[in-house]
Length: 64
Figure (cartoon, rainbow, N blue to C red):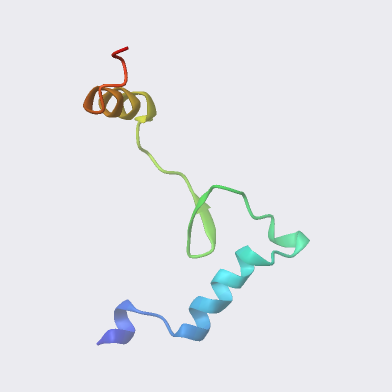
């Protein structure tokens, strides 16, 4: 049963090494999300501004 959900440590290590020591033909994109060795697009709205506003309000950073 575990083989259905987990990969061997050797296979996982090979995938990680590809990103740590990429060959010129690998064309690894910095900051990309990878699934099965291929970059994927994440379909999520940017929430950075809302996160900053909520954090600054919780920490009371706007008050001087």
